[in-house]
Image (cartoon, rainbow, N blue to C red; front, side, top):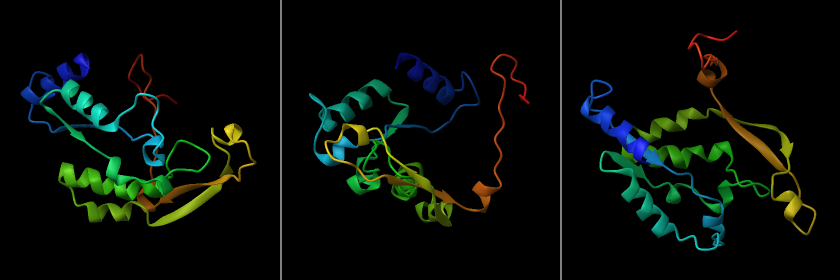
Length: 158
């Protein structure tokens, strides 16, 4: 956390850039939070307090616990499905000051890319039906491209 805070202060006070950056941090809540079965010794309120204290004054923490629910997660896996991004976008927008309603345009359509059995499927005592792997799409996402920068040279890799 010390390195993160040093970088954040440097961005904020102009040491590394022009300064005046708004810096945010968040943690994706674990699925167990919504199932009511926390990991041994895990207390969400305590975890949020510790993170807030560790981050430093120039980093604003965003709590996403209320942005998700148990239904947003795959039944056989610990990850949440992509269409659940809208509640998260709303929560981020409220704190960061962008129009959360505009975030609804993120997913003009919701598609399915087949099925899968997540990490929990093998741990269940009963056979588990596979989850549908869902994704959101829109014209911006469909026309996006990805570039890879070589970590040693910084040049665009072929």
